[in-house]
Length: 433
Ligand SMILES: Cc1cc2nc3c(=O)[nH]c(=O)nc-3n(C[C@H](O)[C@H](O)[C@H](O)COP(=O)(O)OP(=O)(O)OC[C@H]3O[C@@H](n4cnc5c(N)ncnc54)[C@H](O)[C@@H]3O)c2cc1C
Image (cartoon, rainbow, N blue to C red):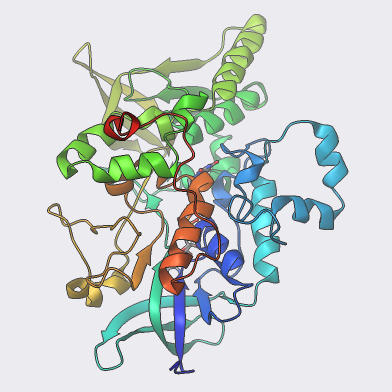
């Protein structure tokens, strides 16, 4: 019998993954759930909403379409309601601008009855008597504490910017790429700017600053530890590795093998859009016709330390990985495009005994995305590169994972879950059975 004081589920965090889940659970009337987020309003990675930046996934990978093409929360319905669908059609290019995606997510969020913004979750405890979870925190709007009870949890608190340990400076002039646009107006007035890293964010920022180099006349350095500027691999048979089939395969491998394998797969989920690499080269070429550019692009070089030469000037130490030489660069501004990683939210600590951990003390994510001892009451989004592989952070697999989680929490196939989509076989024994 359902106790009306206990929710069926609570989602913590309303990034695109839990937002997709909210869209897909909204029509399921027998499910009584809510989603909590501390934010005041939705904005998707606001520090990187550079005007011409696009999503790295196609339009079909919106919040819902791959699970339910008839959903009212599709990107196409967003365009239709805004009156922009014909413009999008005439554009004849099915990629979505990142700022457009952010606005689309906000549009969907505004339509949902289950979202509670300005709710920061501080603690979750398991209540054995009731066999449920107590989620508590603060309502940031009225400053009042809240407490909710729920049978299931879906944690979607996302990843956080990585800063190298040796960065001790607390300066506006040395920032993670996640905050680029917050500081761009200051950066462009510096004499020198150095970008570290060679993922998509680093490339977008380099391109953006290169566009404006003649107006502001800064020296621009782009330095990465990687041996080259890898394009994101986007060929179709490789794309089949973001499929339920490959998740099954990757999940079946021994943990040690998975850890080695994922390190070799960077360019399958972290690389730069091939078109952007080409655009960067072409822009360098065009600008260099007029005058020699104050631009240095260097690979193979790991940043090892940053110190202050003065209040406004940093000394950056690098080690070239192949030449085995050290070198220094002085720069007035530093942008660290050093990626993101998962940090266990503090609110999870009281649940530690109740959750599953692997030998490396990481959450032991089960095939059904649960992480609790019972294997069916705490689910997690976007964690488990080490368990489920490269599909984990991919927005294109969000509809699949959300359909799967909905089946796990309801016991019903509300959204059909494809078992196989790939033409290739990842398990040869099955192929030749
Ligand atoms: C610039 C950028 C571009 C990207 N582009 C793509 C792309 O094109 N294609 C692709 O497949 N992937 C892309 N990704 C990767 C990934 O899909 C995104 O990072 C995505 O936003 C992850 O969504 P999420 O739901 O896991 O979490 P997030 O978007 O990080 O959201 C987590 C939410 O949890 C909330 N939260 C955290 N702690 C608490 C708490 N204690 N209480 C309440 N709320 C809390 C936060 O406020 C936040 O709103 C991109 C990543 C970045 C950084």
